[in-house]
Length: 192
Image (tube, rainbow, N blue to C red; front, side, top):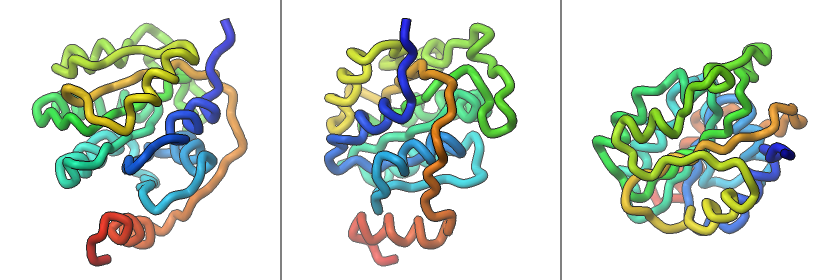
């Protein structure tokens, strides 16, 4: 079976994003989203490992009429497992958490992550109360997810996508947190 290319997956998910706001996890998830096209509605997290899903939750609560997509990796999701319980409790229908699962801690040297040893992040999310949580292993699943990203679900969604562990060249967006925050505020029509 050919594994999905993470860069291609993210590009497909964001191609028809509509008004979606995107929060990225540390490292490769940020590089993948930036490679798909820098946008004022992208909120890149630098050095906040474990925080992407909760930042996405806050944004989804603050902007209930806009879809919010978190793109993160399995290492970050593992570090912030409690986020799934909090997301389930708050239940924003406009939040989708996409976990790119390559089975590695890519930012710390490529050590095997818990998902390569059997931890199923979609099952963890369901166990926390997120009913729409599933694993994607093929392009058909990516297409189905992409078709629904711009519209709310019945509640929050978690999609764990198995991707090839191969590294792609880094595409580095701005690392200036104040700038990233201000440009998103402007994109949302808020004073910067």
